[in-house]
Image (cartoon, rainbow, N blue to C red; front, side):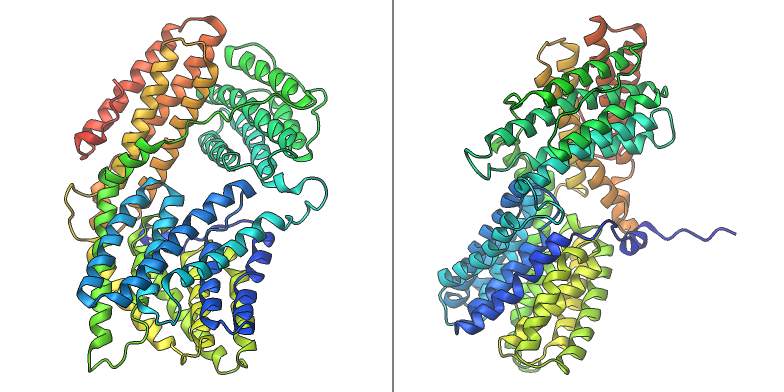
Length: 617
């Protein structure tokens, strides 16, 4: 007998990411929060040391695998927002009474929640802004707001410095500053090879999605600032040229995927050799060429010849990164669009209500002196973030992780010497954060131990029981707010992502059918189409794993995304065929018509407002 499947919201809560241990991030975590706390104690600036350790902890949560250049924005932008929130919260907490302070925090919640819809970095920045605003308003300190902000920036800056300076294990030779970029570009060639191996088989669709993810990751890895302006110029040109050479390969592989006809095994050998050449920063040598028996195979052969030329050129041609950067207009559209409005309102309501409840408890006679009222709004901020998973999953994981972390700390607090034992515990937790990010409950448990250790190191009593109570109250509040109806209807984030994906698919289709000779523009449009589709699929998957009362609002959106995906795949196949023959066959034209008809049919069956329609006609 087969076991009954767990409901999606429970299955998501039990699922954990897998992968190798990020030892470099573990090392940075061990050298960040603990040593910063020790430095603050040694310098007689305990409060500054605690704030610096908190900043390093928050930066460690965002310290994900990738290139050093990408980490500058991924860690630095949220740190700047956190310092701003700490300063604003500190001055507001000192100058305002409970009611005006709550209104200020609510307004910050509306702003930060809306901005979070722009993307992952903006979301992290919005989170840190609100968390530090609550901490600044509720944590008593002798320092002024700007002094606390500087201490916060110093803590985050220390982790960023470690990220830029420390080599990755196994990359001690050569110019290790570009090991993340090389690995990201090499993964693209490996993903092309994996897709070619899977063409015509049951895993082809998953491999095509993995190729999109690899391209997105490499694009982000190369998008940051230069680490060294002059000495790195040769390496810069090679990396950009080798990523650019992967784009026509990915296009040809996608066209072969669309035909669903298996290709010879030797077709995947050349991309794997290219991947090895990227990792070793070497030339490729001879590459096995596929049979030129079909337009997509001829396009693959031409792309391999182009790649071999780019790899073997001594310095590599200067290539601009073939990516469409999302400008100010796109960011503004995301902030004021349906996703930004819905998220902003929910964050503002959760943050403001939790701050009001916490301050009411803080001043109540029956509850006693509620010393850490800022814990409640800070916890609500993390719980209301949709990019951490479905609502039910977030609540379950947060509650379980907090209870486990508080119990573990209560046991350790009775045994560890002070302050040496607490400093060591903070260092150990900092090292565990990069591993714990694979599951929200594990991350919550580690962060709970770390925060409680910092509180006790700051001279306050053990607070495990209070931490559990705050978290359970925040969980109940976020569950209530998460089910409230909002102006504009449900599923704003999904609608916004589908609209962006539909617009990108339309722009790509128009360019291909216009038979423009600008291949660089076509590859950029193709990248944007697949990237926005991947973002839409992620948002849809999260929405589908919500409780049934919430999941029903986005039913059918996955079928729309699949139809858009088929349209973009068909457009790619048409582009490759047009390059080879200069005209479309009746079969290609028919497939395009079928894809557009399927898209219109799926959109008509989904209960979404007209603003979410793809407009591909």
